[in-house]
Image 1: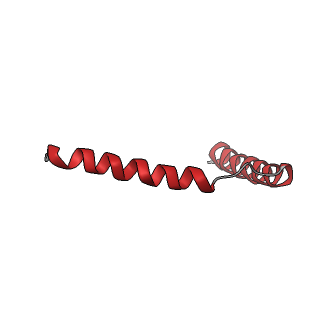
Image 2: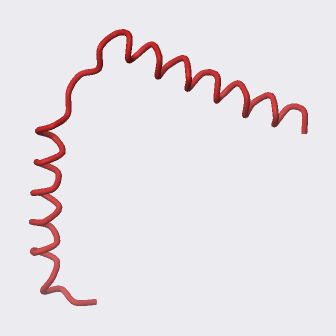
Image 3: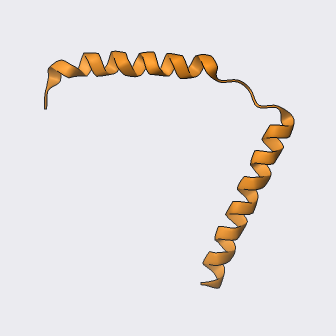
Length: 53
């Protein structure tokens, strides 16, 4: 294990995290409802398959 690269990797991760944080936004209520519905349908399908099999 090369310990000299750890500070460089940590700095790179920090910069990438800052970049991602800057472009994020809060979803609209409609977008949230769509994502929640699709997730619930997917969980229901997986649960049904688990019950049947």
